Length: 174
Image 1: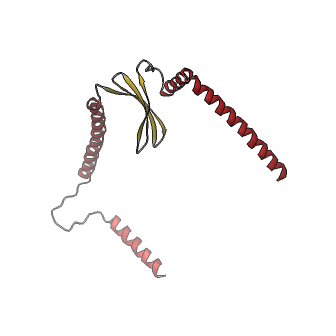
Image 2: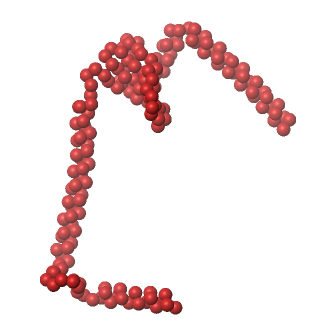
């Protein structure tokens, strides 16, 4: 019962405050003008929007102009392939040499070092195409690796067949 009367009292107080026309201030001489307040609100909102727009275009300008300072005359990042959030493969050209790098959060390893003639980089091709072309060319050049690769794939096929037969036997027994 007491909580119900508290809510009624609060509700009546709110209604009385809202129905009274004038606004009371603790000091005399303060003139409240609704039109002036709305104009201030619009003015401050426009200033806020202006600052946000200025910030957006300012960051874009800084990002574009900082690219001039980062570029190097002797080194160029040709492409980067993200394998997962922590692992990347990059092709970087330094002078007349092209490096293929594997990068993680803690390490950078050189996967291969090629002359510019061995890998022909075109802006139309994607990183994966270049990497596949390089793999194909390097395997073809070295027949020993291709023979070794075929033998490994045959062994894996044979072991997969044995595992499949074992699983079939286990299914029959179970």
